[in-house]
Length: 211
Image 1 (cartoon, rainbow, N blue to C red):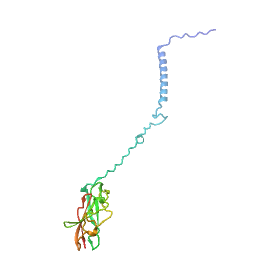
Image 2 (image 1 turned 180 degrees about the vertical axis):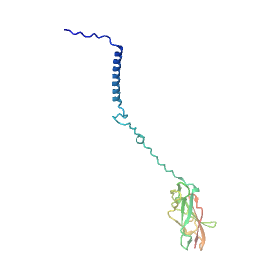
Image 3 (image 1 turned 120 degrees about the vertical axis):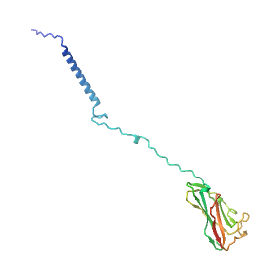
Image 4 (image 1 turned 135 degrees about the horizontal axis):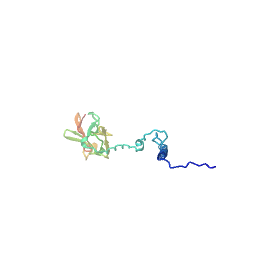
C-alpha cells in the first residue's frame, strides 16, 4: 500500500526572504567571529590581553655620543717687548773692600698669554755705570755665549741661573785681563746696574756702593 505525499507547491515570498535574511545573518556572524580572532580587541601590541605599550625611545641609546673636543693649547709666540719687565738685581747695596758685587736679573711676563723669549747669555748684557761714565759691560770679554729659548708664563718671574761677578775694574773689549785693567773708584762711590735681555732693558737701574 503506497502512501501518497502531499504535493509541494511554490513557497510564498515572505518565507523566501525570511530564509534569505537568516542565511545573511549567519554569514555576518561568522565574519564577525573571524575578525575578532584576527584583531584580538584589547591588545595593540599583538600579545593576547596586553595593553598598548609606548615605544621606547632609542634616541638616548642609539644615537652616538658626542664628545666635546678639548681646546688645543695656544702656540706660544715671541714675547712683545711691551709685555716683558726686566729687573736688575744685586746681592747687596754696599760692598766692603775686596767684596765683589754679584749681578743678576729677573724677567716677568706682564701680558695675559705665555710667550717665548731668548734669555740665553748671548742675549744678556750687564752694564755698570757711574754718572755718565760706563765702567763695565759683561759683553766686553764674554766667553761661550749661548742662546736659550724660555717660555714666560703670565705673572711668573724667572731669574738668571747664576749671578755674574763684577771684578770692580773698568772693562774694555781690548783689555780682558783683569790685572791690566784700572780699578773702579771705591770709598763710597755710587754705581748703577742696568740689564738688557734680548734687547729689552730694565726699567729702573739698581744702585749700589763700593767701599
